[in-house]
Length: 275
Image 1: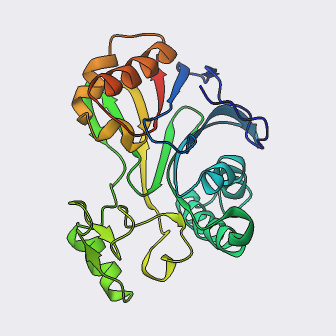
Image 2: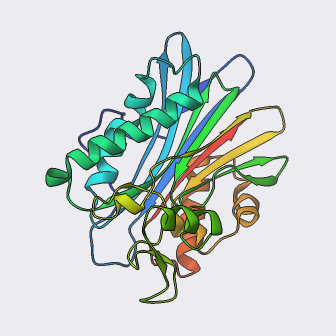
Image 3: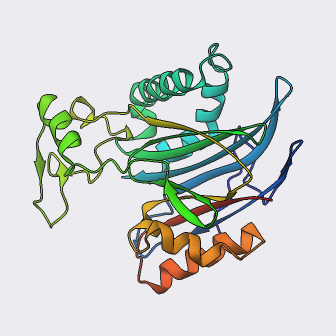
């Protein structure tokens, strides 16, 4: 398991949150993939007190062409979101603004951070009642209500018609060469990401955002990188862990099953259980 020593958000922990209605517990797992490069997945899992609110912060960042951008996001993105003046009045707009502003900072610091980039899926839980999920790229958030999986994020793949149109309207192209996976300009297998300065003119960092209410039927939330979702369907993931009460054990079970299914990518996974 990878540990980070430098972090504005505290290190991920198997923590607990409380509100007037339920107890919320969370756990996580990080597994290095089969590639020769260093681990490029990072995550955040913590609760904070912010302006008399209890805020759960959960995120998975899947880096590519190096880990520096994902590391930067782990240490800064939630701070940037919560520091937006409009967050408590219009959180969705604040999240979008923070995503785009953070991308500009990353691009401006490309000489230090390198040429790579990162996908992101973030979930902000306010007082155990309101959940805001945002994402760029193909890391994914899945909610379970009564054991039924509901995908809250959108996989931004270059082969999707809307994403292909956006890329082509920016002057880029989508190609399956080399290999059989659609790629932006034949290079990147996601249509939206932070960083990637050489592709940014053809690549968006605008997040899709979803707001949902946590009710008494809500069982759990799973956030994971595509190292999990390449080999597992949403409902399969929920079915695998819905009876595991310990979220740390649940996250480890998901990662182990992905490895058993021959996933070769880095795997990062967070499970949040609502009791």
